[in-house]
Image (cartoon, rainbow, N blue to C red):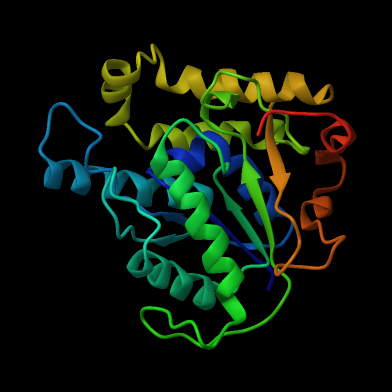
Length: 263
C-alpha cells in the first residue's frame, strides 16, 4: 500500500496546514500517518507542563482518529525541537518503519524555530532512509525508494518579514474541509492559549481564513492548501509528483517556477 506521513512540530499544526491533503491522499488509497515532534507542553497558561502534555496528547490522538491516520507519539518538548543527532536518529527510525512515498512537513521558512527545525529534521531523516551507515534509534532496516517531500505554507502564509509566500501547487480541500475542521476542534485546550499568546480571536476561524485565502490564491478552489515540492535530488525521480494522483483537486502554479517569490 502507498503511504504518506505528515510531520509537524506541535499538536494542531497538521490540522491547520496539512490535514486536507492528508485526507485526500487517504481517499486516493494511501495509508496515512500523523506525527507531531512535540507534545505541546508549553501550550497553556492554566496548567503545568506535564498536565498540558497529557491533555494535548489526548487531543492529538483524537484528531488523528478523526483523520483516520496512524498516530505516532511525540518525543520532544515545545521550544526544544533542535536539529541534533538524537532527534534526527529517532525521526529516521520512524521514516524507516513507515516507508512513506509522500512526506508532508513544514515550510523551510516560518515564524518560529520549532517549525523550521522540524522541517530540517524531516528532510534529513527522509534523505537518510536508504543509508545503512547512518544508524537510527532504535535501529531499523534501510531501504532506497522514491519518496517525494512537500513543504506546507508557513503559518499565516507569510515569511518572518511579512511577505506573502507563493505556493508551487494547490490542493483543493473543499470536499474535506468539514473533516479538517472537526480534527482541529479536537484541540480544545488551544482556543484560550492562542487567544492569550498570539491574539488569535478565533482559533477555528484562523484556520478557516487561511484555507480561504489559499483557495483565493489558487484562482480555482474555495478552500485549499498550498505546497512546495522539495527538489528531487536524493529523494525521487525528477518528475515525481504523487499529489498529481489527486486529479482535478491538484493544480500546479507555473508562476512559482518563473517568478521571483518570497522564500
